[in-house]
Picture 1 (cartoon, rainbow, N blue to C red):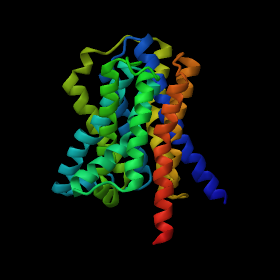
Picture 2 (picture 1 turned 90 degrees about the vertical axis):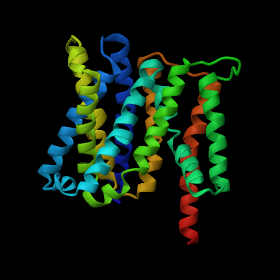
Picture 3 (picture 1 turned 180 degrees about the horizontal axis):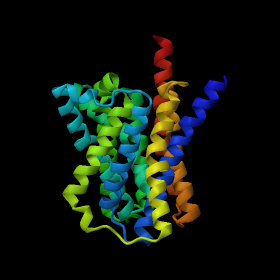
Picture 4 (picture 1 turned 45 degrees about the vertical axis):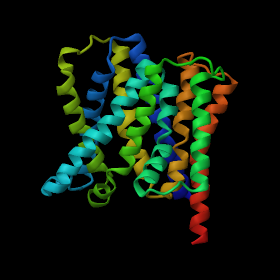
Amino acid sequence: MEKRKLGLGLAAAGPVLWGSSGTVAQNLFDHHDISPTWLVAIRMIFAGFLLLVYGATQHQDILAVFKNKHDSFKLLLFTLFGMTAVQLTYFMAISTGNAATATILQYLSPIMIILYLAIKDWVLPSRIDALSVIIAIIGTALIVTQGNFQSLALPLPAIIWGILAAVGAAVYTLMPQQLLRRYGAIAVVGWSMFLGGIITGIYYRVWEATPSMNLSAFIQILFVIIFGTMLAYLFFLQSLEYILPTTASVLGAIEPMSAAILSFLFLHVSFNLYGIIGILFVISVTFLQFIYAQKMTQTN
């Protein structure tokens, strides 16, 4: 029982830190001369490096993936189209909109997975999957319009980036499964972050856009790197030693809730009743999928 409580606590702490990092990032974009691409590159380089150092201290063979050329190529593809894509689109969604809606729109990733699998296998979604898609679409419509369907409550670029972040999160979930089984999450996530940060930094020439920052900005950047990225991943991965992945994924619903609450408290981002209902609709999809998975497990 104590181990289960620890697992639940860790699984909840990870999403809270992820959600809070988005809120801190929004504050950096709004009040400091920091670009999303610069923050993404710095965040990924240092968080990835720290994860790899942690893996090495745990006596993991963090270089094992590079001993296989095929797996090294798969890691590079995941770095570009999974890890880097989701990081860039998410932070662009924050910079063009706000952390709360960016996190909530990114949370549409289960819907993207359902649609991808339906197209890939050329089969109609199950009734529960179809219901999940409908609920998510209604929830998204309520969030981006706040109930006024004649106008958008968010800038169009923020909506587009948020939906692309959901696509990126779906790719991030589906793409590395074989690599994770062979080499472990610490090595795969650590290398994809570290390499993705270097690639992003070189592509956007972030050394030319290094901002002048005060102590407050520096502390916030450290928070995004250490607490909002490295520790968030470690807590979530560590929780899987004590609780089931399905349970951990349900607790992931805390992330958009925490982002919305923190944005309301500190950044004055608010939602009307329609927007709140939309948030609940989007989050409820995870619970629907969890209940259905549990039912199917008991049936089998």
